Amino acid sequence: MTKQFNIVLALTFILFLAACGGADNNENAEQPEDNNTANGETLTIQAMNWQFDQEEYSVPAGEMTIELENAEGNHGIIIKGANEGEDIVLNSSGSTMATLEPGEYQIECSIPCGSGHTDMVSTLIVT
Image (cartoon, rainbow, N blue to C red; front, side, top):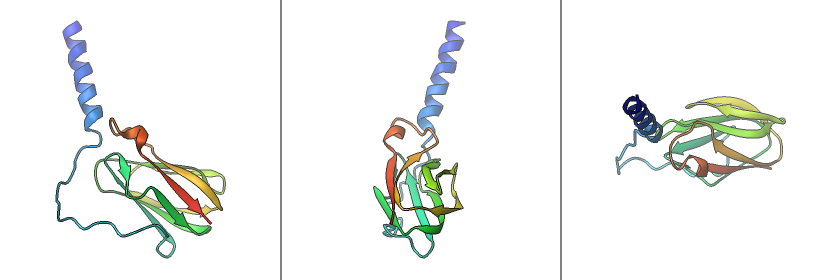
């Protein structure tokens, strides 16, 4: 019984650590554009293993498409209170419409993705 428990525990641990796996080590890959301000009415947030492509995003207030791209691993985002007081949630690559009010909001990874998950934060500044 203990041996089976240890096997299940080990497999669970391996799956947890592999959640952000799938890294593409292509060094010639195109680097993301500077996305510090929204390009038109779309803000693209790119997620990689244990980090976002920027520490801070700045956009104007108003209607905006928020887009999440998973460059490495499987990630989601939550931006608490940014959509007229409601949370913005994307649980995988995709997009959603939001009405952003001026303020500063924290962007967090919403899918446990391994040992660096808790450090996967960024800031959204809406002016």
